[in-house]
Image (tube, rainbow, N blue to C red; front, side):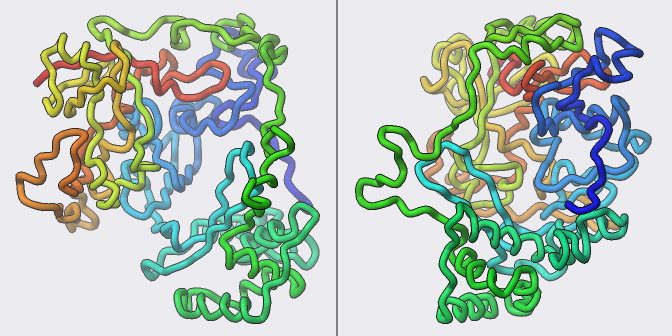
Length: 480
């Protein structure tokens, strides 16, 4: 980028930062007030608690998009009231389709577009048979008014005079004045990638490209603006890629030979897997000052002060997982997906269930050191004795799970639909009646997770990788 600003400072999550190189270490030594993470990135669960602890600083503004910390972070809804501390987070803005669990606590909720109304480019894992790059693009318009979040960031960048935005933002003659400027240039990169560009779209295909969008998107798309985002030479190739939703390598015939090099997968992970990592072994735990072990080790989960998890009267290890029918916190608004399974049940092995007099469909209480939640039992051999768990898609307070008030007017949850009362009495594992169930069903698994022993309590994290400890909580389950 021309005239780019030089990055400086420490991320609020303290990721990719060595504690011993900072002024905080000179002032505090060991232990640090909160963990520092020298190696990992993308530690979004650390943003809010770090700001509230003012460590390393508080925030003047926080913008949230396609993320709900109250649904995804350990401690979840216990953090809700902390978001109201306007001394530590002065402005909170959320972009959301609905008033979600986190956005309900924002100063401003700006209406977001749905996935069918926006450009997207989602990455895929590197180990695969064939080269694939998908390019999502607007295919419909659900509501008048909402616009892509990228418009907000682009306009804010231009208002702040930041380099890379506006005229010549991508270089001489390559402007960044519209969202299309960004995504159509990305499509051109995909079209020309790998040293062998895709062919030009034919005249017939170019007509199909225009006619389809005129019919579906109508006046919400501007063909001239799309074309202006790339060169005249690039446009037919961009249309070729977008008409196909991306670029997809051919498989090479019935034997799929294009996906392999001899016996090896063609596109395979080629990074080094170290049995001993000298960089990790040379780094020190900011809480103890002792060197990490450069080799994989097996030990009990510990909190930052070195103490183990509270397990008094809570003998069962609690785990959670992603639901097979819900991909994110946002999909609870889909009744079709809730028809597949309308709640998250407490999975118990029959050994633990018999010891507690619990049967499938019993109402139960799950108690950890930090919370108690109610749920419905599902006795199964699909989970080992001594372990209980549930999927993480339910237990919403927002997304129209409950009524809320805007400017004195109450907005009620969507009317429940289904069948008669008999059909609504669903037994776990038998959802054949097609009853969707309400959005408020189930419980938040994150409410059960343990807090760390640091300033401004937050979830326990892996000391090296930084990941949230989603699988390290002990509970007891009792029949109600």
